[in-house]
Image (tube, rainbow, N blue to C red; front, side, top):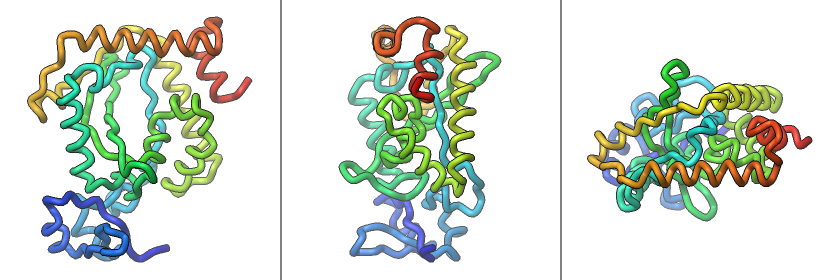
Length: 243
């Protein structure tokens, strides 16, 4: 195990990181810190290495069927979404907030973090962070399964969390059951007030219509490929079990 951890240091906060004990590796072009200094650098430490956190650092977080297509990309003007996602990249120092890694083609992708209230059935946006493509694959489990990459994602989830493959599989199975339960309801609502308050953006008038159109398109594609019998639960069952 390396004694150094790659940090997520925004360009504007590099002096703060240096004061806390971080050093810049000119060869790898990244900020690092010894494990002994991590407590003084918590804002920059990837989740999997933070001494104040415990696994799971990464797990599937599947969106109920009624909310497919309803995200900031659909609900905001392009320039507002671009500003939010690029800010997420900058705040992470173009490093993954979970593992500290980067992708081979582009460093990080913007991941919307949602909280679900199963009583009121409200999906609430809590923030947007930068994730490397491999960690993002785990988060977007349904899309990953449809691409046939669940085995790679399971291995990565197990590695990041320090789990066995079977424990990672159980986590994925639990996420599937949770998705099926939440997808029984069609009255889910979406709250993006975090983006409105944080960035001063205003949802576009046609956002609901765009989101609904995308939702219908995603559902139609799934049913065309796997048949309408049994609904979307059969679709996900087919993806996951291959039968």
